[in-house]
Length: 209
Image (cartoon, rainbow, N blue to C red; front, side):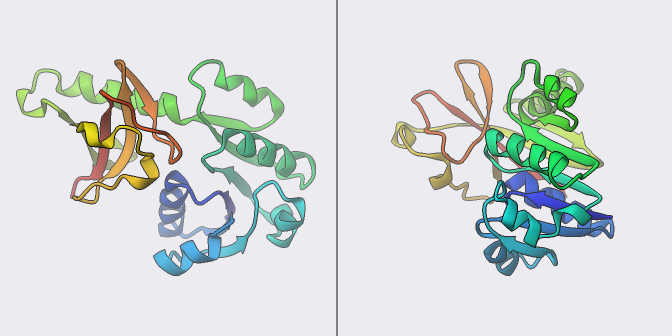
């Protein structure tokens, strides 16, 4: 199938890798799509530009796509791009990434499937906790099986020196991805623009080999 990914977010890039492994053709639309392809050598077609720009989407041949996935880190742009795909380019299968944990399925009534990163994250942790609650070895760390892959989630306490820093400027020395933030006992989806507050804990994720 021909699948268009709107937004070079971490979930978007991860999805493209999986799709390519399965033999699908992917088109990436993002302000830095060509840069991403040069750095990662994914083997995808690229068009640089804003994902809600109809001229850019026309250049990317959105109308010929079997599926369009709006995967950027902006919920508003994902929803707008999904509407454009459905209404202007007549794409039959549109999937959009949203961040709300409540009533996010209401977007399904507009004609495209919505998937909540927040709900998926919470569900993954709940499954991991339920599966390993009796194992003392998993204090501060749990393993969950997601789509056939074992993912290790680690809870990391931060020093005060990180207070005020934005997530985009924080890197894990062991190469793990920042998956979420635990703040006041609530799990928040990690967004690059988020500022860390005193007492925050990072949820780090890595694939278990």
